Image (cartoon, rainbow, N blue to C red; front, top):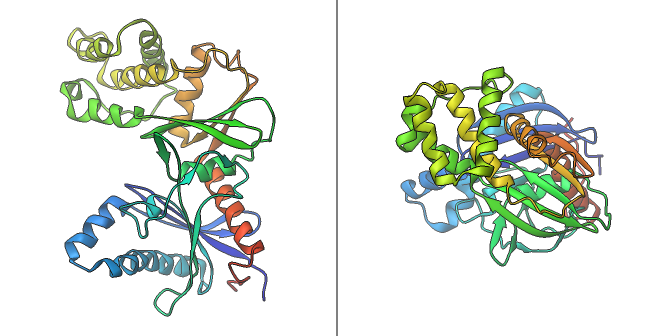
Length: 336
């Protein structure tokens, strides 16, 4: 069989869809197609269509097919037979096909994640490697486990911490090459609710310049306040900050962010001195990195390393794909 030259990377979240054509093995992104067709919206569309359960997978694959066609047009070559690696919420109750969670612990080299191969068909000419999430007795994650694999953490005896900011921030303890503990924090979701749907909404205005001196100062003020004042009271200060002209609405945006991120990090293990790996979107990684330093955690731990979300997602998916290829689950194919 011909050598695999490309694969299709699908990061299908609850609220967003990202499909990338990736060059193998250098992991260079050749073409990209994104939309707001997340699993929640797609599941709702499928329900509204009134299709039977056995048509659900085909409904989701039709969306994938439409995006593959966009990539083919951009790439200039047919992609039939190119494998698709799908991570995120696509394996959940609102995804294309529900898969069981892999129980903790799991290997951070990706060798024991739960996957399912969907062979290519006449309607969808791509084998699909669907990656499931992981769970502890009281916590779960889907998608972040692939990013953890993509961080290539060394299998050291000393504990390491994988920290993934987002709507539901994840803190994963890694020991001897195994992810052994997980805690989820609803930091991003609380921020959205408070800043958009609560009484605080009128006092907050979205801003995208974290490095602006006034914004950075407001963020740091929020982080410090989170360590000294009850969170429920501190949150109300967002309103009085605006009422009493203490902070502008955009400054309040970063004050509230600092308040919630600082409160999340207040649970950082007191005796932890290992390496911290911070991975995610740059707009979120920067504030977390700043909060870690402000709280004195950066100077206490062995190191703080940052990775972009795309980088670790592609690396993690490539690891799982390589495992499937090695096991003979997928044929070696070429796109040109």
